[in-house]
Image 1 (spheres, rainbow, N blue to C red):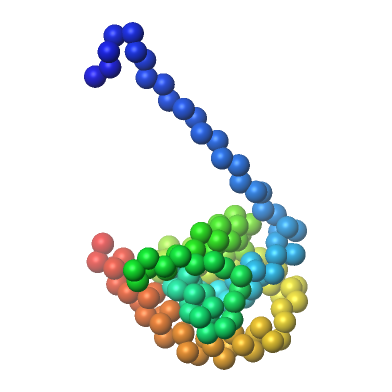
Image 2 (cartoon, helix red, strand yellow; image 1 turned 180 degrees about the vertical axis):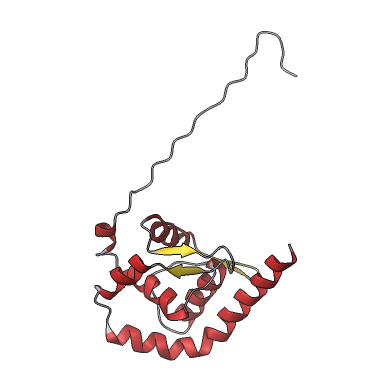
Length: 149
């Protein structure tokens, strides 16, 4: 309980965020590659995507993300920011049923106009065969958890 003469005040905290536009994403190779990965996987949950990107980095394909590992949990604030930006401009959407991030039609149109190196595509295709089962297992586990709720 507050003492007489004391008053409680609430502080308003403002944080600034960079505004993303489709034009600003044209020069962001990391987000374009992330979009391409989501397309290649035909959708993935944020958790599966993060672990997949971590595995790709361990195998030598670095998309420029920094990871934090605590115990068995892998996370990256950078991936979260990029996903938020792609959601904001409407290039990906979160499927309410499967909880997977998937490309939208405008995301597909944007990706079709982008130049992605063949070297990256080939390396990704080669490495994805190794980690795709792990990504699918994480998504299936999430699906089963959500089904129980």
